[in-house]
Length: 273
Image (tube, rainbow, N blue to C red; front, side):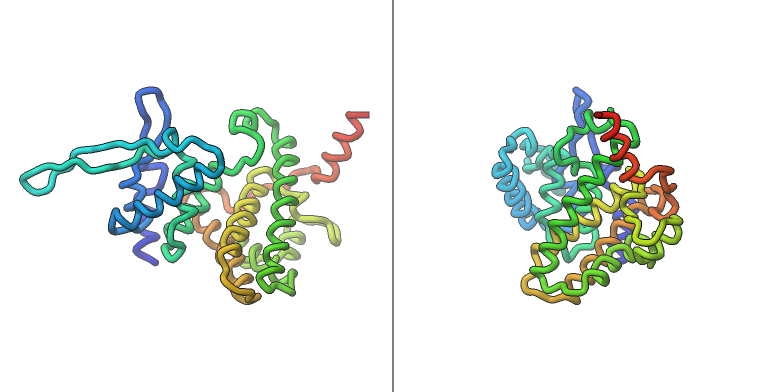
């Protein structure tokens, strides 16, 4: 695990990104293979094929996301042609979602590409046009919807103590802090919702915690509360490690907005009337 984390630190996903002659970003499949820890191309190729199926099933064009790119490589004194792929960011996201979760770098990659691709309804351009309050309102809806699905799946996987399950995710992401600890640090009133008092960046980190936990719990073979709770903690921890390695501000160091989401929603309702 240590060696894989060192590889990730030395060669992050942004560092292997390329641009074509039109300024479009892309990744090379064989470079992504190395970063994710797959030693043999044949095993990684099967992951690509699964990702292509997922791409097709979501009604996205395979060719525009998985462009075949034949390249010449030297093998001793001779050369040979090998198949590679020019991958879109979406293709990379699908690949890591279908990769073997035993690799630590795969978990990091799932978090990384989820950060970049998970916008649900808004395009990236539309999202960037929103002001901070609008971004908060939008991401708060995502956390509400995401938590509904997460807790539904968690219940199916044997979770009964939802306070413990919830705090496990926060502890991983917030360096040991529980929901109550976060609320006290933010100076919130009793039972005031902590997610209503986060900026868009902090909400974003929690969206990724929610969605990635949901994804892993779906793969859990049988109901087991301990495994599900540990999974939530580990997802939060890995997201925290990723944020640290990318040089972003830790979630507990992000500022608490002056207005809560409920206040923003009330203002928005009054403005409509």
